[in-house]
Image (tube, rainbow, N blue to C red):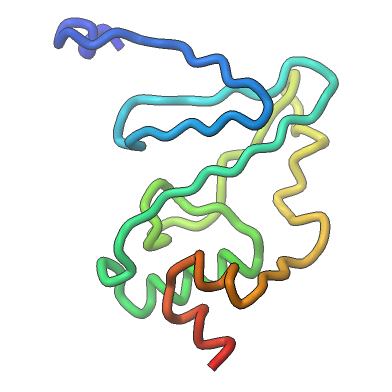
Length: 124
C-alpha cells in the first residue's frame, strides 16, 4: 500500500449497506473481510468481458463452474476455478458452503442475461 500512496493513491474504505451495489475495476487493489457478527453475509461478485476473448476450453470451464456453483477469478474466461476458503474466527465459516442451497434454475431470459452463447444453446 505504501507504493500506491507514493504514487498519489489513497486507501478508501467503503461501508456497504444491505442491497448496495458496488462497481469497480477489479484491477484496483481491494479486499473483503469475513463477517464479524452472528448474521451471515451474502454477496455476489460478477465480472464481465467479451466471450470472444475466451477460447472453447475456457468457455467450457466457465460453464462447468456455473453449473457446479463454483467461483472463478476476476477474469470471466475462467482461467482459475475455485475460491479462497472463507474463515470466521480462524475457522471455516459455517455459512460458506460454496454450494447453492438449491440447484441453479434460470429462465430463458436468465440465460440470455448471462450472455454466453454456449449456455444459450440449452434452449436451441
